[in-house]
Length: 319
Image 1 (tube, rainbow, N blue to C red):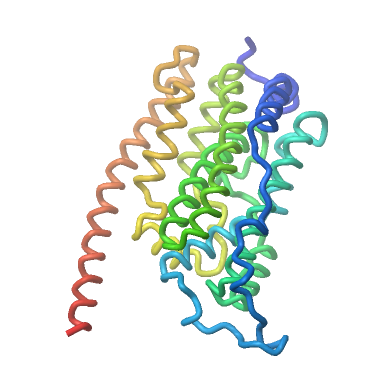
Image 2: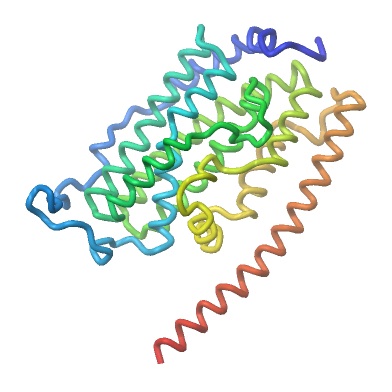
């Protein structure tokens, strides 16, 4: 097989894989409706309609759950940017177009359901949420994979890891809400994200078979530069610290539940079809993962000390 292809040639070679995975997705995905996951009987008017505007005590979500829900929703809100980037990486023809449009429609459903739940249950300040949505979407997303390359290889590598990371985050957010309705909704969304991840993972796996060195280079670059697509949203740093500190999505989960399972599925460290260049890239990736493991331990030590200080502070305040 050729060891180098242009992006156009690669897309052409991968189209049968995209078509078969699209068929698999359509036969596996379950249709669902956002209105079935929202407790509408809890809704009431806001001041503009003669009711009462939002106050913090109306929310039954804790600080961590609110931060995670807002981050998850604002991430979904940047869908126009993601559609543009994926359309650029793929194609507006054939199975590629059908997939991109189907994926976009399914992702849009996530944002609809999350916003309806949060507004109806008064989980967060709707004014603050709308202001954050405007700021987030006006900023958009241009370089989520950190490489500046929006062609098919870094594009499909990034969304493989990102979709799996989003699945983990949604599932843990549902549990953190301590509300069976939110948990059910976010479990449903997480199931969608898993199916999306499988599509992209299979495409990237096929690309590894076609152009092993080039695909591995893209995978390695994405892992080394990875950041969640919401990195530029308002209060992202504060919210991401809360999310990591309380186990919604932290560095160990990123390594052990996202990066390592995907690399194992692709058989990265046992393949024998790389050239000397690919072997060098694989060695560099292995060294990066070792550094991540050390970073995990350092982060957890710092987190444990911080949580202990928080617990001591609460105890003093309760006396």
